[in-house]
Length: 235
Image 1 (cartoon, rainbow, N blue to C red):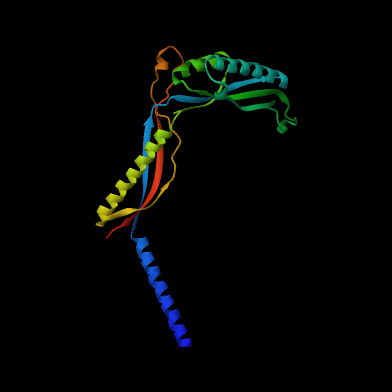
Image 2: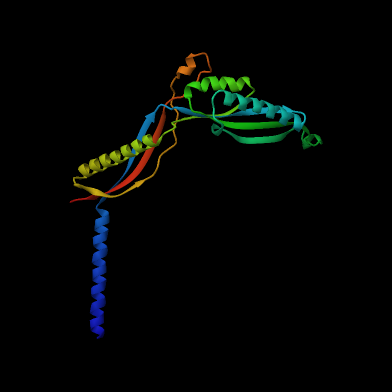
């Protein structure tokens, strides 16, 4: 009985070993690649972060001056055609201003004033009006600009096109590797989408730079996609 059990155990071990070897051989006969896709497009919208910063001896004076100027900026943005959903307060701050005197001269630093800042994000959906919009908010008191980003309002078709290009790139790479190795490329075993990168601006002149408004370089944006693909080797 023990002999029979031993033989059965040995047979099981041999079977598992052979299965493991077969699996290892299968896993080793794979080609893994990464495909990249990039689509460039002319932006049709811009997001600008702007605001007002004022300094005054008293906190209330700094806040009042900043609030009044921001109210004028917001009114002007809406008058320029921006919808309320495209205007959002990003940050409001009030900080003391300290004197340069330090402990080295035996005197403690003193508060000499206050700085109030209010930052607003505005989304300009008609990019041709970006120059005039910037001119308008500056004339209303905006004196702090923290960023300008261009984009595409409906970017889904562009992302899909970049993803398709990434898959095609992955297939081309796999075919090249198989040919160089002298093997036959098999079907796709697995594929994974790794998303893409944020749009990156590229220099390009806009018509708005020629109509007397503030010159703006919107550029083209690049939307990217990345996929990893695993192929089997047929022979």
